[in-house]
Length: 351
Image 1 (cartoon, rainbow, N blue to C red):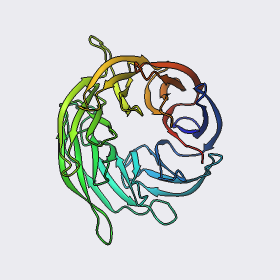
Image 2: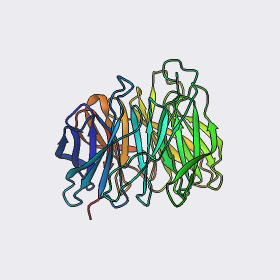
Image 3: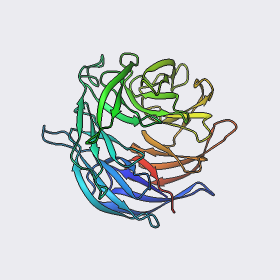
């Protein structure tokens, strides 16, 4: 069972996924959810936090985050509360493993914001706002800082932020005291000028960080020191086959359940780049780019078994499921489901 956001459709769609055949069917929809674009569950899958990416038409067009209570048996959602994202164009949210804090990036504000999660599981008033400054070489896309994604490291000691506007990965140490948690600058790492880092993922060991770059169509691989938060780049690879000449903007990135493959989505080329991954060294080898049978694969997700990938093709209004060949890493198309402008997929496991 999975939730899918359709930001030009009716709202949040509940779909059922059959892992026996890789088939999908739409069950229900939660309507009147304002431009949902990203979401995160708490650790028990009992509450869902949904970003409302309000268009920044004015300085007071602050984004929002909505909290929904989840019925674990049926997948139905009940709105529990709405809070400010304390910035413009929120685009990413995560929740720590103890369900104590949520972290949101506000793209247009170039900010990282931390929030407490209240006793009723809703988002409280912000604890801290860190605003980035600077710009990149791409005058249209990097005129200012644009915080795009945020993740926690394996030991929940640091928060890492990919800033597309300034071509940096920023690392902040989490400092816990008796009152409220604070974030303090720990380290940073650069990607190539104009590459525009977007999304990130760690491998299971927490030693290697993988960053997909929206503007440069590349993946940067970093060796990560969990004690200090420092990053050392050890590789960069293209998400496109050699000689490919096309306007392309990368989006999402995930590692297979067994850790042997890494996948990244290409918008423009409309494909999933498949890499073989060396678990010992962290290094990647490009295998091929699998067409997604749709346009603009903004997001994709692995099912809980790790045997399938579901791709959200935003501009062709369809989800497409693929099985993963564990021997070759190749993706085999299984089924399609029509969803209006899907932008994000999250799986819910039943009790």
